Image 1 (cartoon, rainbow, N blue to C red):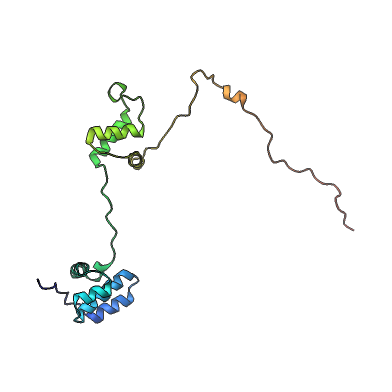
Image 2: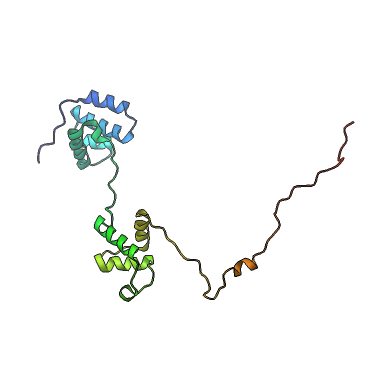
Length: 183
């Protein structure tokens, strides 16, 4: 079995307990206390019990502590999933949306999200959902627009002729005369 990785020499158990007492971050305090037990000549297994983790996690804490000090034991933000499209693919998608579809080539007269999903699959082999493509377009500054349906033979101004003009819902009450008298 290989030897355990040693801890930094510039800290001791007392210093780590003091840091754990001052910190506002609970998980960092738990990690500092677990490492303080190692400084106090406890086994790594005992430190794992105190930290509520496995030996591998304690080893990771030791490596982070040795590299960055107590700051290395603070929870970091998870990196998250990599973006689906890279910059080159986003630029191609922007050009495609700006240029519009060619009915003879693309088979559509206007782009819908599902058509763009199909285009991405054909061009780059990327299988993206409609929600993902819509989110990407929104990030690039595009908004979903839909035309209001209109009959092809509708005369201009025909709708205004049929609109009802109602009197205002609120009217000022008439003034009251002599509803009470002061004596």
